[in-house]
Length: 114
Length: 109
Image (cartoon, rainbow over all chains, first blue to last red; front, side, top):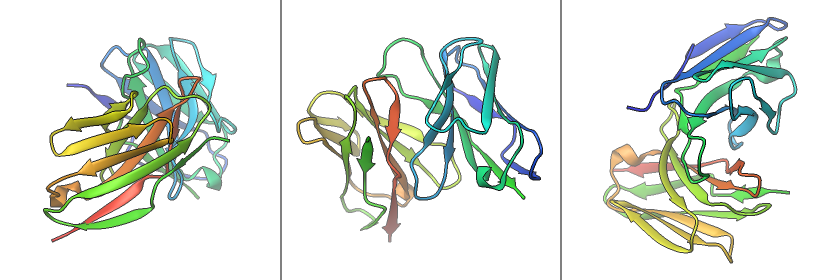
């Protein structure tokens, strides 16, 4: 069964802290994605990766960085958390070949920055 | 700019039929996806359309008209468990997904 896991379901951090969100997939997918989801807005792409050690900026990369050292793991880093980064963060993965492939999502991490 | 429009909220009755519309304006088109997302959970894939017409999958069907920039998701024989948000997403010319804000569907007994 397809599985994407995220390190935490809920996280509370203070302004200025460095935050790590981890995502692991067990499907040998090439592509991995980080989104944030806010009420009234669609999913917004932060970063994505098509291969190990490869990363591409999405629509809203400011204030975030990512790391992909292994194929199955894609980490999102908030270098200095701010209150406007309070959101639901969703990780997703998809196979590398063919654009009709759906994305498989993790359960999400609800991050609150105080 | 790129834009996906869908109604914010819809209400329907158990056992009835509901149609959720999605209109889009994107830079190129490489297919349209529908996802279901229950409150507090991850989105899950429902359907993919790249050619015009209707795709049926059990109680759910999805329709696409590329010339009109329009799609709809049709849910038949509604059940209480269908209460969820339904997300429309279009893959643009760069093979990136552009997401709508989602339609919250409320099913009443």
